[in-house]
Image (cartoon, helix red, strand yellow):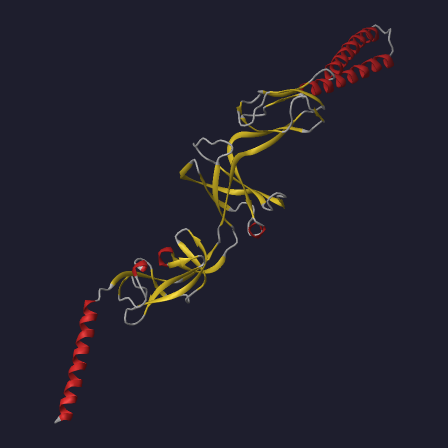
Length: 346
C-alpha cells in the first residue's frame, strides 16, 4: 500500500511538471523574422579616401624668356577670364632687343626696295638683288623672334579659370620656362585629389569608377573615374596621389572643397555575402548571425567581416553558403528564441 502511494506521488509530480512546461511553451511569444540565405558573390572591396576638389585641367604658366618679374596681378583662389593679364616681366632688357630687330627690319626693307628698283633698270646685278632679298628675310625672322619674346614676356589667362597657386613673387629673377602660376582651366570638369596607401594603390587602375560626396553638398552624389595615379609616394605622408575626374553638372564648385570618395577597383573577388541587417553584436571585424533549428529556435553563429559594401556585408569567415539566416528582425533575437519565419528560403 505504501508503495502504491509513493508511485502515485511521483506520477503526480511528473504530470504537474509536463503541464507547467506546456503552459510555458504556450505563453512564449514567437519573434517574427524574415530569412535569407548566405550567397556567394563576385564583388569589389571599396577603397575609402578624402581630399580636396581642384580643376581637372591644371597648367603651369611661365614666361618664354627669362628676366625680372615686374608685376603679378593674379591672386590665389580668384576666378579670371580668358585673356586677362596675370603677370609681366621688366622689359628693360627685352625692349632694346625688339627695337633693334624692328630697326634692322625697316633698314633691310628699304635696302631691298632700292636694289629691286635698280635691278629692274638693269643697274644692279642679280647677285645684288638676291643678297638684298636674303638680308630682308633674315631681318624679318629676327623681328618675328623679338616680337614673340616681347609678347611672351607677359602671362595671360589661356581660358576662363582660377588661380590655384603663385609659384613666384615680384622682383624675383626667373629663367625661361620656369613655372610662375599654377592655373586651373574652367572647362566644366573637376577633379578631387586624394592620397591612398601602397596596399590600396596596387588594387586600383585607370578609369576605375568612383562615387563622390562633397561636404558642401551632402545630399548630392557624383560619379567619377580615376585619371591620374601617382608613381611615387608623397615624401611627407607616404601616400600615393590619385586624381579622380568628375562633372558636377549645374552645381557650382570652388577649388578647395572637401570631398569623400568611394573607389571601386575593377578587380573583383568571390565572397560570402549577407544582408546588412543580418549582423548583430558587431564589434570591429567580429559579429554574429542567427540561423534556426528544426524546432524554429534561433541559433547564434559567429562571423568575421571582410568589409561592408552599401547594403550588404562580405564575410571573411562564417557559416557555409546556403545557410538560412535571419535578416529583418534579427536584432530582436537571442540564442534559442522561438521564431516565426516569413520569406523562408527553401
